[in-house]
Image (cartoon, rainbow, N blue to C red; front, top):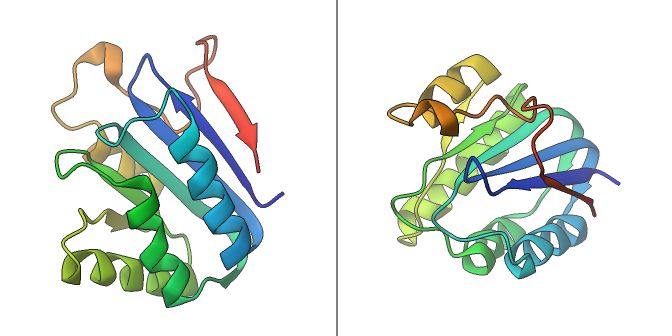
Length: 144
């Protein structure tokens, strides 16, 4: 399974991790799974980690569907950690799609540290997120 995600209700964050090969079908399935999760809401912050993706086979059609399925709030801070040039380029395509179509777009970073600094900016200490490292907290982990 290339994707896992965690909905951390306590910190109000959606954490998505991808690894290996990702494609359209699995990505749309992931988005549908998240959207139907009762703990998810469009206003929560999100952290997407693509640093372990070795082959990114996402088409622009699937990138267009993600925002429609998850219906992100304009106030939600969202980050993508790309890791390499290919994932950075695909993430920029997604960001451009969002901008053109009035969907709130994520910020894209090359490192977790930069992404976390942006994601946690202005957040109360009890809501600070550390990229899936908040040990001991009740979270829901789901593999797709």
